[in-house]
Image 1 (spheres, rainbow, N blue to C red):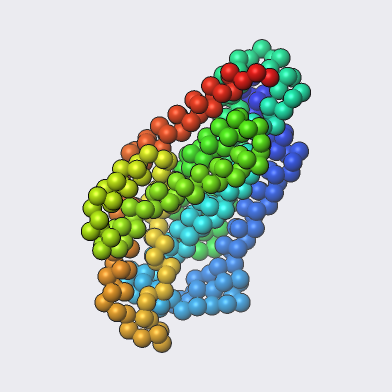
Image 2 (cartoon, one colour; image 1 turned 180 degrees about the horizontal axis):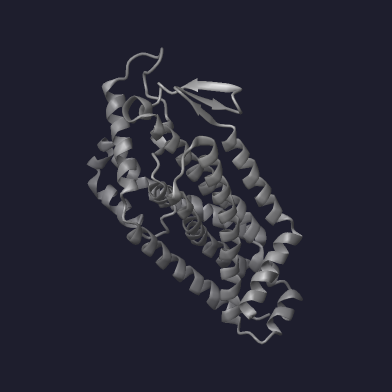
Length: 317
Protein backbone atom coordinates (compact mmCIF):
# COMPACT_ATOMS: atom_id res chain seq x y z
CA UNK A 1 0.00 0.00 0.00
CA UNK A 2 2.85 2.38 0.86
CA UNK A 3 4.56 1.50 -2.42
CA UNK A 4 1.41 2.31 -4.40
CA UNK A 5 1.00 5.61 -2.53
CA UNK A 6 4.56 6.69 -3.46
CA UNK A 7 3.97 5.82 -7.14
CA UNK A 8 0.67 7.72 -7.23
CA UNK A 9 2.30 10.71 -5.54
CA UNK A 10 5.13 10.71 -8.12
CA UNK A 11 2.68 10.61 -11.02
CA UNK A 12 0.62 13.37 -9.44
CA UNK A 13 3.71 15.58 -9.29
CA UNK A 14 4.44 14.97 -12.99
CA UNK A 15 0.83 15.72 -13.91
CA UNK A 16 0.98 18.96 -11.92
CA UNK A 17 4.09 20.02 -13.85
CA UNK A 18 2.42 18.97 -17.13
CA UNK A 19 5.58 17.02 -18.01
CA UNK A 20 3.64 13.78 -18.37
CA UNK A 21 1.41 15.26 -21.07
CA UNK A 22 4.34 16.99 -22.78
CA UNK A 23 6.02 13.61 -23.26
CA UNK A 24 2.76 12.05 -24.47
CA UNK A 25 2.36 14.87 -27.01
CA UNK A 26 5.95 14.41 -28.17
CA UNK A 27 5.36 10.69 -28.69
CA UNK A 28 2.33 11.52 -30.85
CA UNK A 29 4.39 14.04 -32.84
CA UNK A 30 7.13 11.50 -33.51
CA UNK A 31 4.53 8.94 -34.57
CA UNK A 32 3.11 11.52 -36.97
CA UNK A 33 6.57 12.10 -38.47
CA UNK A 34 6.98 8.35 -38.93
CA UNK A 35 3.55 8.23 -40.53
CA UNK A 36 4.70 10.82 -43.09
CA UNK A 37 7.46 8.47 -44.34
CA UNK A 38 6.50 6.08 -47.12
CA UNK A 39 8.20 3.42 -49.25
CA UNK A 40 7.02 3.22 -52.85
CA UNK A 41 8.94 0.99 -55.23
CA UNK A 42 12.48 2.32 -55.53
CA UNK A 43 11.78 5.58 -53.70
CA UNK A 44 11.41 6.82 -50.12
CA UNK A 45 8.95 9.67 -49.60
CA UNK A 46 8.99 12.09 -46.69
CA UNK A 47 6.33 14.44 -45.33
CA UNK A 48 3.52 12.59 -47.11
CA UNK A 49 5.21 12.76 -50.52
CA UNK A 50 6.50 16.34 -50.47
CA UNK A 51 10.06 15.09 -50.88
CA UNK A 52 11.35 11.85 -52.39
CA UNK A 53 14.73 10.19 -52.79
CA UNK A 54 15.91 7.22 -54.82
CA UNK A 55 16.80 4.06 -52.88
CA UNK A 56 19.42 2.91 -55.38
CA UNK A 57 22.04 4.99 -53.56
CA UNK A 58 21.68 2.91 -50.38
CA UNK A 59 23.67 -0.23 -49.69
CA UNK A 60 20.71 -2.32 -48.40
CA UNK A 61 18.91 -1.95 -51.73
CA UNK A 62 21.90 -2.76 -53.90
CA UNK A 63 23.09 -5.62 -51.67
CA UNK A 64 20.30 -6.92 -49.43
CA UNK A 65 16.98 -5.83 -50.82
CA UNK A 66 14.68 -2.89 -50.01
CA UNK A 67 13.14 -4.51 -46.91
CA UNK A 68 16.48 -4.03 -45.16
CA UNK A 69 16.17 -0.29 -45.74
CA UNK A 70 12.81 -0.26 -43.98
CA UNK A 71 14.45 -2.05 -41.08
CA UNK A 72 17.24 0.53 -41.06
CA UNK A 73 14.68 3.34 -40.75
CA UNK A 74 13.24 1.48 -37.77
CA UNK A 75 16.77 1.34 -36.36
CA UNK A 76 17.06 5.12 -36.75
CA UNK A 77 13.92 5.69 -34.67
CA UNK A 78 15.16 3.24 -32.07
CA UNK A 79 18.56 4.88 -31.78
CA UNK A 80 17.93 8.59 -32.34
CA UNK A 81 14.40 9.17 -31.10
CA UNK A 82 13.83 6.45 -28.53
CA UNK A 83 17.44 6.20 -27.39
CA UNK A 84 18.60 9.83 -27.28
CA UNK A 85 15.77 12.34 -27.48
CA UNK A 86 13.43 10.23 -25.39
CA UNK A 87 15.97 9.60 -22.63
CA UNK A 88 17.01 13.26 -22.39
CA UNK A 89 13.40 14.34 -21.95
CA UNK A 90 12.71 11.63 -19.39
CA UNK A 91 15.83 12.64 -17.45
CA UNK A 92 14.47 16.19 -17.33
CA UNK A 93 11.07 14.85 -16.25
CA UNK A 94 12.39 12.70 -13.40
CA UNK A 95 15.44 14.62 -12.17
CA UNK A 96 13.37 16.61 -9.67
CA UNK A 97 11.82 13.60 -7.92
CA UNK A 98 14.34 13.39 -5.08
CA UNK A 99 15.34 17.08 -4.77
CA UNK A 100 11.68 18.12 -4.53
CA UNK A 101 10.89 15.39 -2.03
CA UNK A 102 13.87 16.49 0.09
CA UNK A 103 12.81 20.15 0.26
CA UNK A 104 12.31 21.47 3.77
CA UNK A 105 8.69 21.02 4.67
CA UNK A 106 8.05 18.34 2.04
CA UNK A 107 10.51 15.87 3.53
CA UNK A 108 9.15 16.47 7.03
CA UNK A 109 5.70 15.36 5.93
CA UNK A 110 7.07 12.29 4.15
CA UNK A 111 9.29 11.16 7.03
CA UNK A 112 6.44 11.55 9.52
CA UNK A 113 4.75 8.55 7.87
CA UNK A 114 5.38 5.01 9.19
CA UNK A 115 7.95 4.02 6.58
CA UNK A 116 11.71 3.57 6.86
CA UNK A 117 14.02 5.90 4.96
CA UNK A 118 15.59 3.03 3.02
CA UNK A 119 12.18 1.74 1.92
CA UNK A 120 11.04 5.25 1.01
CA UNK A 121 14.16 5.68 -1.11
CA UNK A 122 13.62 2.40 -2.94
CA UNK A 123 9.91 3.08 -3.52
CA UNK A 124 10.69 6.51 -4.93
CA UNK A 125 13.44 5.07 -7.12
CA UNK A 126 11.15 2.37 -8.50
CA UNK A 127 8.41 4.94 -9.11
CA UNK A 128 10.81 6.64 -11.55
CA UNK A 129 11.15 3.32 -13.37
CA UNK A 130 7.36 2.93 -13.51
CA UNK A 131 7.01 6.44 -14.96
CA UNK A 132 9.46 5.55 -17.73
CA UNK A 133 7.76 2.20 -18.37
CA UNK A 134 4.40 3.93 -18.91
CA UNK A 135 5.86 6.56 -21.23
CA UNK A 136 7.98 4.01 -23.07
CA UNK A 137 5.08 1.60 -23.53
CA UNK A 138 2.90 4.35 -25.01
CA UNK A 139 5.62 5.43 -27.45
CA UNK A 140 6.67 1.92 -28.52
CA UNK A 141 3.13 0.59 -28.99
CA UNK A 142 2.11 3.72 -30.93
CA UNK A 143 5.12 3.54 -33.26
CA UNK A 144 4.73 -0.23 -33.56
CA UNK A 145 1.22 0.30 -34.95
CA UNK A 146 2.46 3.03 -37.31
CA UNK A 147 5.19 0.74 -38.69
CA UNK A 148 2.72 -2.08 -39.19
CA UNK A 149 -0.20 -0.15 -40.64
CA UNK A 150 1.80 2.38 -42.68
CA UNK A 151 4.87 0.39 -43.75
CA UNK A 152 3.55 -3.15 -43.50
CA UNK A 153 6.39 -4.03 -41.11
CA UNK A 154 5.24 -6.06 -38.11
CA UNK A 155 8.15 -6.74 -35.78
CA UNK A 156 6.89 -8.11 -32.42
CA UNK A 157 10.45 -8.00 -31.13
CA UNK A 158 10.26 -4.21 -31.35
CA UNK A 159 8.02 -4.31 -28.26
CA UNK A 160 11.03 -5.48 -26.24
CA UNK A 161 12.24 -1.91 -26.57
CA UNK A 162 10.07 -1.06 -23.55
CA UNK A 163 12.04 -3.07 -20.94
CA UNK A 164 15.28 -2.17 -22.72
CA UNK A 165 14.37 1.51 -22.51
CA UNK A 166 13.68 1.17 -18.79
CA UNK A 167 17.06 -0.53 -18.37
CA UNK A 168 18.85 2.19 -20.33
CA UNK A 169 17.14 4.89 -18.30
CA UNK A 170 18.01 3.19 -15.01
CA UNK A 171 21.73 3.37 -15.89
CA UNK A 172 21.47 7.19 -16.04
CA UNK A 173 18.75 7.61 -13.42
CA UNK A 174 21.02 6.17 -10.71
CA UNK A 175 23.47 9.03 -11.36
CA UNK A 176 20.64 11.56 -11.40
CA UNK A 177 19.34 10.27 -8.06
CA UNK A 178 22.81 10.27 -6.48
CA UNK A 179 23.45 13.86 -7.55
CA UNK A 180 19.92 14.89 -6.51
CA UNK A 181 20.37 13.40 -3.03
CA UNK A 182 23.81 14.94 -2.55
CA UNK A 183 22.99 18.43 -3.88
CA UNK A 184 19.16 18.68 -3.63
CA UNK A 185 19.38 20.48 -6.97
CA UNK A 186 17.26 19.47 -9.95
CA UNK A 187 19.46 21.43 -12.36
CA UNK A 188 22.61 19.71 -11.09
CA UNK A 189 20.91 16.32 -11.38
CA UNK A 190 19.95 17.03 -15.00
CA UNK A 191 23.30 18.41 -16.12
CA UNK A 192 25.52 15.87 -14.36
CA UNK A 193 23.43 12.86 -15.35
CA UNK A 194 23.45 13.94 -19.01
CA UNK A 195 27.19 14.58 -18.69
CA UNK A 196 27.67 11.10 -17.21
CA UNK A 197 25.64 9.63 -20.06
CA UNK A 198 27.89 11.37 -22.61
CA UNK A 199 30.96 10.05 -20.79
CA UNK A 200 29.55 6.52 -20.77
CA UNK A 201 28.95 6.79 -24.53
CA UNK A 202 32.49 8.03 -25.22
CA UNK A 203 34.06 5.24 -23.16
CA UNK A 204 31.83 2.67 -24.86
CA UNK A 205 32.57 3.95 -28.39
CA UNK A 206 36.35 4.22 -27.94
CA UNK A 207 37.14 0.52 -28.63
CA UNK A 208 34.85 0.61 -31.68
CA UNK A 209 36.86 3.53 -33.10
CA UNK A 210 40.01 1.42 -32.87
CA UNK A 211 38.23 -1.48 -34.58
CA UNK A 212 36.83 0.71 -37.35
CA UNK A 213 40.28 2.12 -38.16
CA UNK A 214 42.62 -0.89 -38.13
CA UNK A 215 45.72 1.32 -38.20
CA UNK A 216 44.92 2.46 -34.65
CA UNK A 217 45.13 -1.11 -33.38
CA UNK A 218 48.87 -0.92 -33.85
CA UNK A 219 48.83 0.74 -30.41
CA UNK A 220 47.95 -2.56 -28.74
CA UNK A 221 48.55 -1.45 -25.15
CA UNK A 222 46.27 1.58 -25.50
CA UNK A 223 43.60 -0.48 -27.25
CA UNK A 224 43.50 -3.21 -24.58
CA UNK A 225 43.50 -0.63 -21.77
CA UNK A 226 40.53 1.15 -23.32
CA UNK A 227 38.70 -2.16 -23.74
CA UNK A 228 39.15 -2.95 -20.04
CA UNK A 229 38.02 0.54 -18.97
CA UNK A 230 34.97 0.31 -21.23
CA UNK A 231 33.59 -2.54 -19.12
CA UNK A 232 33.38 -0.41 -15.95
CA UNK A 233 30.57 2.09 -16.73
CA UNK A 234 27.08 1.10 -17.96
CA UNK A 235 26.91 -0.05 -21.58
CA UNK A 236 24.42 2.63 -22.67
CA UNK A 237 25.62 2.35 -26.27
CA UNK A 238 24.47 -1.28 -26.42
CA UNK A 239 20.81 -0.23 -26.22
CA UNK A 240 20.63 0.52 -29.96
CA UNK A 241 22.02 -2.86 -30.88
CA UNK A 242 20.04 -4.87 -28.33
CA UNK A 243 16.80 -3.21 -29.44
CA UNK A 244 17.71 -3.62 -33.13
CA UNK A 245 18.56 -7.26 -32.56
CA UNK A 246 15.25 -7.89 -30.79
CA UNK A 247 13.34 -6.12 -33.56
CA UNK A 248 15.32 -7.85 -36.32
CA UNK A 249 16.24 -4.62 -38.13
CA UNK A 250 19.36 -3.35 -39.86
CA UNK A 251 22.15 -1.08 -38.73
CA UNK A 252 22.80 2.64 -38.92
CA UNK A 253 25.05 2.18 -41.98
CA UNK A 254 22.05 0.94 -43.95
CA UNK A 255 20.71 4.49 -44.19
CA UNK A 256 24.05 5.97 -45.29
CA UNK A 257 24.36 6.52 -49.07
CA UNK A 258 27.00 4.37 -50.70
CA UNK A 259 30.20 6.38 -51.28
CA UNK A 260 30.78 7.17 -54.93
CA UNK A 261 27.26 6.32 -56.08
CA UNK A 262 25.26 8.51 -58.40
CA UNK A 263 27.21 11.28 -60.08
CA UNK A 264 29.95 11.50 -57.46
CA UNK A 265 32.41 9.05 -59.04
CA UNK A 266 33.57 5.57 -58.15
CA UNK A 267 34.17 4.31 -54.64
CA UNK A 268 37.86 4.11 -53.74
CA UNK A 269 39.44 1.02 -52.24
CA UNK A 270 40.00 2.92 -48.99
CA UNK A 271 36.28 3.81 -48.89
CA UNK A 272 35.39 0.16 -49.35
CA UNK A 273 37.73 -1.00 -46.61
CA UNK A 274 36.54 1.57 -44.12
CA UNK A 275 32.87 0.94 -44.89
CA UNK A 276 33.44 -2.80 -44.56
CA UNK A 277 35.25 -2.32 -41.23
CA UNK A 278 32.49 -0.06 -39.86
CA UNK A 279 29.79 -2.51 -40.97
CA UNK A 280 31.72 -5.40 -39.42
CA UNK A 281 31.88 -3.53 -36.10
CA UNK A 282 28.11 -2.90 -36.14
CA UNK A 283 27.33 -6.48 -37.12
CA UNK A 284 29.44 -7.76 -34.22
CA UNK A 285 27.70 -5.35 -31.86
CA UNK A 286 24.38 -6.88 -32.92
CA UNK A 287 25.73 -10.28 -31.84
CA UNK A 288 27.05 -9.08 -28.47
CA UNK A 289 26.06 -11.15 -25.43
CA UNK A 290 23.20 -9.23 -23.75
CA UNK A 291 23.74 -10.98 -20.40
CA UNK A 292 27.30 -9.69 -20.05
CA UNK A 293 26.31 -6.18 -21.18
CA UNK A 294 23.26 -5.86 -18.93
CA UNK A 295 24.83 -7.67 -15.98
CA UNK A 296 27.91 -5.46 -15.78
CA UNK A 297 25.78 -2.34 -16.24
CA UNK A 298 23.41 -3.36 -13.44
CA UNK A 299 26.39 -3.96 -11.16
CA UNK A 300 27.53 -0.36 -11.70
CA UNK A 301 23.97 0.87 -11.12
CA UNK A 302 23.65 -1.14 -7.88
CA UNK A 303 26.82 0.45 -6.48
CA UNK A 304 25.64 4.00 -7.29
CA UNK A 305 22.12 3.33 -5.92
CA UNK A 306 23.54 1.96 -2.65
CA UNK A 307 25.74 5.05 -2.31
CA UNK A 308 22.74 7.31 -2.90
CA UNK A 309 20.59 5.36 -0.46
CA UNK A 310 23.29 5.51 2.21
CA UNK A 311 23.51 9.29 1.80
CA UNK A 312 19.71 9.64 1.91
CA UNK A 313 19.37 7.51 5.05
CA UNK A 314 22.23 9.18 6.94
CA UNK A 315 21.38 12.78 6.06
CA UNK A 316 20.02 15.10 8.76
CA UNK A 317 16.74 16.79 7.81
